[in-house]
Image 1: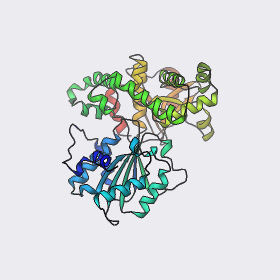
Image 2: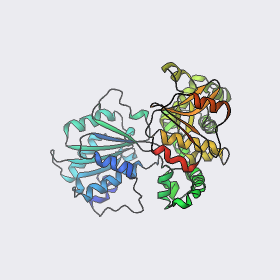
Image 3: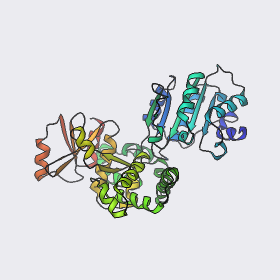
Image 4: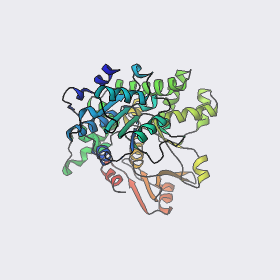
Length: 390
């Protein structure tokens, strides 16, 4: 194990430099704010969204603050060579290598933490017994759930999301001056095709995105859940993408794929827990929110583009607005008398998405009639700034 740990932690022997890394300040600042407290920090989100990069940035920050390089450990616990080792054994071996005393504070970064059995209890034991700051990452939301409450009051979870349009322009080194803001529309169409995954933005590739989707379906869903019919899962996801931005009927998908409604519902959950899709509930009383059809949105516009191509640009625009809103708001869709308004937030802000279009007719009447604290029709890329202000 010693050789493996040295491979994972090059700063133990050499200078550690991060080349060609673009800092996502929103997340880095949150992590820095929590680096001195005791809480375990969980990073979660879609595969390849940048969780590992964020951990490496924090490691570099610690080194720059003159933290002893041997007091920093990074390891990806899904490594085949570690499959027989639990977290406590890994820490013990690491401390032996560097002769670290019991009272010495260490900073530990566990990637793909959910590959460890009973990791919640192991982390609790480390948290309670050692002088330790733990960062851990996972690409599954459900597997991070602490069902036995071992870490209640001991942890903070941060979801890392794909880059938004403004971050995309930073990554692409695009600066749009006020006098040239008409160009934002064409840049947004590029963003729609490429999406918000950092590696794909820097080197756009349809193959990269397709391999990512296949990896998640194969490794995080099919293999992890022990499913047998691989093609059904791929067909299911294709159907989800074709329906993104629309109300979803679990029964209709079940009929198309010739599976039971319960199986259809379970498969949908698997896609949601791995962040491939997001579900939006209907505004209303609790039973209405639970029982009514959910709207479905893609996790990333580039992935949506894999399946939909250039058709229905309005659905991309609506999908983007949803992804922005879910950063800071509890959000729902509103449906009355056969007409729909795209978004209604828990603090009563009403938002309709109209990409280069206008709201008219019965939908306009519904929009005007709804009692809301604020109302917005977002009809162009240059009005997306509204989302950062509400």
